[in-house]
Length: 261
Image (cartoon, rainbow, N blue to C red; front, side, top):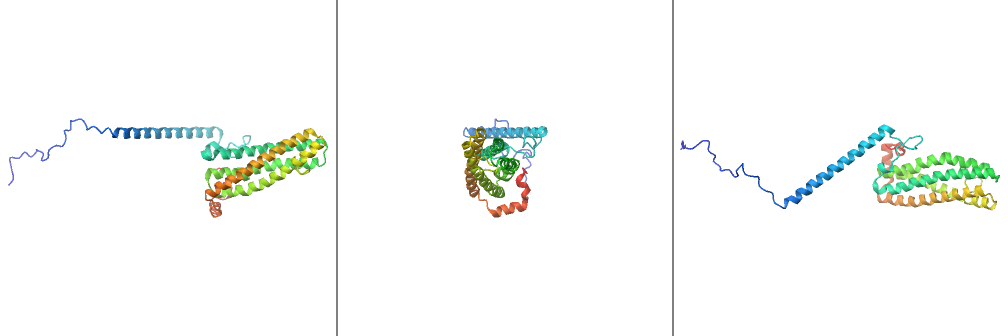
């Protein structure tokens, strides 16, 4: 039977807690975890703010100066080891860039030495001058585009074809460096044989420039040979294969391997 005396508004269940009581206190053990989470959130927020600031600064720099920054006198490409190369690989790429600068300086000194040889009246001076001028005009940009830029892109993107470009063209550069170190008269190289001939003939100015050129050829040649071996070890450890290189060539084309894109 229905109980008509029962209050219809009365709850059939007792309240578990008083809604006006203070909220339950969390255990002391949870407090350190909360602090650690808050610290992690603050750290991530700070990191995001730093990255956002860097991107804004870079965008502002690009807006003012343009994306391309190399070579400085006529920018054609963007070159920034600090911005594009992973931190662990920056020292190696910086050394390779410095070796390329040594090569560039050596080509200039080599030209000056050959001019001095011509002025000194040494036999074969005309051939040396023509050869040294040709080396400066062609070897300087080709070395940058054919072996330095590919390995720069290789460490930036870690793709196989960059490494094969580098190994092929830097191998030729090492042979060229050996040829220039020897310094056969009349070939445009103020190398070792040329230097000895100039000192023996008491052509002191030309001999000193030839000595500097010989040192330059040796430094950049030995340095490139050392890093060639180191890069090959990295290439093998990374698992790059010719099949991967062919796939990348089919996907991107060869032009991509000399540009930033």
